[in-house]
Length: 127
Image: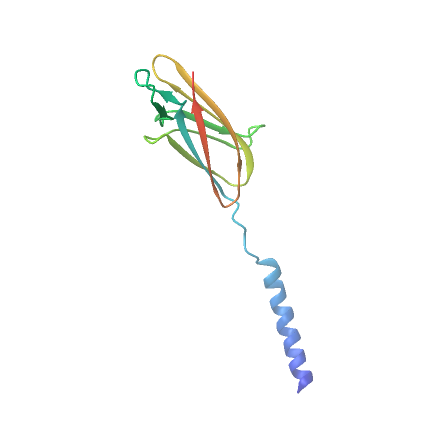
């Protein structure tokens, strides 16, 4: 009886082993990036009060990796936010610009994308 149980156990083990080895879970490597486009720190010229960074809606945003492997282009929303996603982690560069009609505001940043996470970055646009 023990020998029969041992043989059945071995058969069960070796029939399940290939399933366990070749049908493993696929790891989600998707990375999300949320970029906030803001003005440089502003000060009220009359009161001297520091107004801080103000969100810039309508900024053109470009995200890229050296060599052009990862790339995304878009426009920041009413809150100054642009979001995008990539299939895998990387270090990416962000360029943003906004033409306010009198001058061109520009800014840059570099961030590391992390798999399965949303990374937030801020780009300060200045003359």
